[in-house]
Length: 355
Length: 265
Image (cartoon, rainbow over all chains, first blue to last red; front, side):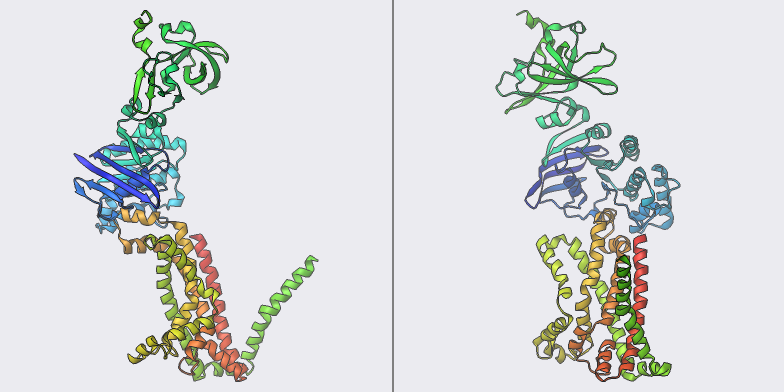
């Protein structure tokens, strides 16, 4: 069942076209990540879903009913703000109880629900503290509990981890994921951090310059990026101007002006003896080596092109200036007309060398 | 050299602030305690003090309500448009720039008995100029920026995140104001109220023009002091002045206290 449907959503801020004709559906119970660079319109979309911003054009439907005209108070949403927006003059308990108090829920029931959420979010013992007496991670949990207290149907989170230390962020991510799964609430969160989106979301929508570039599972988006933007935004990649010069892609990239994006994990470097299929490799020279803790980041020069790849610490170490063999397993190719993923043709079909 | 400056500073302080206060107290008690009591228990003095009290009360309440509303609209009122808000924002400061006497004159010109509006109100039995409403309006004109300028920075600082959070949690405008906005701005409002009371108690020019200074009717404490001095009744003037000064000193202490409270919060 579709929980959220958005059709032709459009929004201008003055002369700035923030959201351009955006449409998408979200299934009930799913956790969706809106991923994209800052200023790309993600937050605007989220705020329009919440009713905090009104669209210039387009329709928003919750459970098949149009909600454009409903104010935020009546949309049945929970919103977690980027900087939490906790009520400074209220204790943790009062913050969480706020939504229920507004609904005039009986006191005993409020107490019960708040304690339940305090327990769930691991804030036990902090009920009487004020927000400024809490750490960033605790504030985030309070914001989360506060949004969940009135039992919303849809949870919207705006950069929920942006203001938290890297270490605690990791912890909170898995915590949030688990919690949302347990509560079973449809959730949409905004982030500019691809790791976060890939790790937490069931489905990702990549948004850039006010448009949805691609919507799909993290794996789909990673494996088959629909546009050059998605290919370059997700994961690391090196751009190659003349894809036709890449060994094994001469046929795939024969259309003039075809470029390639190559991820480090698509590239393998090593001594000739490390490759069972030498015909699929070409010669290169180690240009730079960077130690990255768990592996080496190798910059290798092939012709006039520098490619980047990782090399395991277990393998025989390389030195700068070493001649090596380089194999490009696959490349994301694109030109004016289309974009597609191509495999190294010598790898796919070793017999072609014979012809 | 440094010593000289310190001495000079103390001297200026003494001559400018302490000496007049001492002299005023002396003149208030020139005829002893009974003289002081007599000067302030004259019917016109009691009436003038009452008028001042009433004006202060009305102005503070009105300024509180409209000051908060104006500040809210100027900071949060996106529907007003940025340009209109910036124009309104500069108009708020007008009373700072215009002499209170001119402010009073503007009110006389606008709603005086010779104008259409004034005539209309007179017909329905309400006098504005040379009566209580005019005095309140004149004092409100002079004190209006005080409240707005205290609240606006606080509103800007807290931002509208908490208010939006309140809206997403199901609270409508009034609930949000009462539970979220008000607790954040109340010390700003208190500070603005203290400033308003102090300013409206001491207001002279605007009130003088608008009230006509009619004894036992529209005379306020400050205009009575002025009249007493004109009549060379220095001791009586000193008595009322002392009461105003004592009240102001009390307000200053209160102001310090609200300031501290606000910092704590």
